[in-house]
Length: 90
Image (cartoon, rainbow, N blue to C red):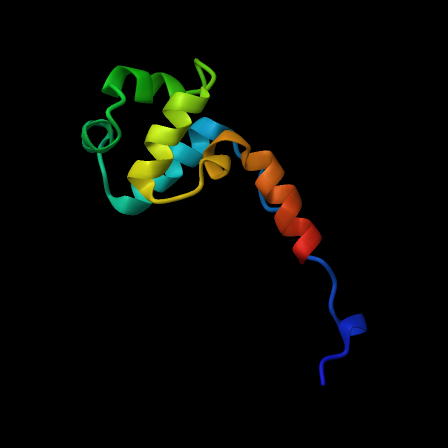
């Protein structure tokens, strides 16, 4: 039997922006921006702007990019909220 008093909630390691999440997922896949552009139908220029947090991501782009990665759009649009939910579950 596990004694819950022996454990503490994990501390967050980093707060990521939408752009940082996109870059991280892209690099984990080993894709270039051009590859992600082909898979998501978002131009490489827009991907660069998103990854560098020069523009805010909109619903349409989040849906396109999330579909390319096979993740829920909230993972990209609301990374800070996802971290909060993960902390609550810990």
